[in-house]
Length: 526
Image (cartoon, rainbow, N blue to C red; front, side, top):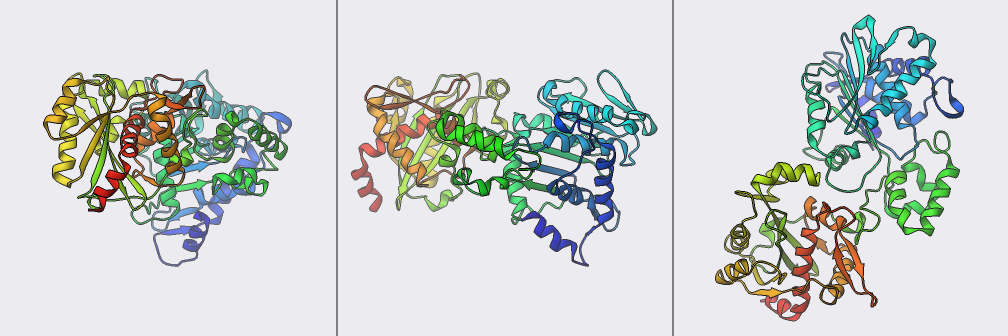
């Protein structure tokens, strides 16, 4: 889709951009002449680029500004499955930027959250130099970096905890496995570090990851919109190259595998992929990893109650469209210093519309961002989270939100489900403000049947939540515990910081909805 659009652009005589075959070929020639493999059966041999790699290089380096002659693309997101040569590809491009791009004092960085991850591309580049007599004669190898004396340039691996992230003047930055970057801070620092260069390059090579609305999820969603050239996302300087299956069912179809594995048969062995697919068919626990890493289908953890595919729903609604409706509420108060969630569930025309608000103590925001590894600050700016003044969640703020939904949008909760272990003070406060409160016991006997029905509604795409990233995160963190009668209840995953408050709040509302379904349906018809 992207190449087709760019080819059409290259044929036009008008416009800001032009295409130069020579500029792209120059980089291809550099890589295939001077870069050598350092692993496996190809060790010591010159790198021979696959067609998909040549196409990417030709576009990255071949599209130029007609007036200035500078490169068009400043940021590239290259999504492909594992073992398709990501590290070799990235290392070769960064070596070109380091040595042959004609940039004085070029600063080249391989970046990751951890130093060991940052060293993967860097070590690949260093090994390429060792295998090439021409490059080895020109490059000084220090303990922590590489130096190209002719242009006073350096190449260095950096991690998020490095002391040198401020004051960088990057010409090229390579981020390997973008999904491993948990916060926006590192990405933004490296992006800003390129601002003084005339034609810098931020190269992101990655497989998919488990959903957490990390920087990967944000950049991936943006890349899809740019690839589709959606209105408002026509970013001339961002190049999305996304190799992935078109639907989750295709993982069983060998003819579709190349969609996510452009190096299949040349770089990645078909026999290897056949083996791991067969293993995934026999073991559902392995399937999530195969879907994520070999087919770039974003997944939750392997033990999750719902998969990312089941949770996803791109249908959107405007709150004004459901104003004046009856609803059912739910709340998970959690602890006073933890995440609290309030939910409104509106049933209309066979669909369930979910509105949620999350609450955290303002004094704990920075610690919770660090501990939970999610962007509460970004979510707060989007209106998905509210900060409560002080060191603990203000339950008056939760009541105020329910009142706001009722008074401003005329969304009337007929019942609000709550955990009886919650605050009696808050329950009395809600009752005093006119809300009918109803207990929901947090056990399998109460929650099992509604949870199974709710899962079916998710699978059928009947639950519309405006792609709320916090709810998606909570849902895909949620695992289930079964008793001897196959009754289920929600539990956290293996990690204590995997919040499920949004899930529990939604289930509470759904339990009450099913308890009063006939009465609710009759009221909604009025």
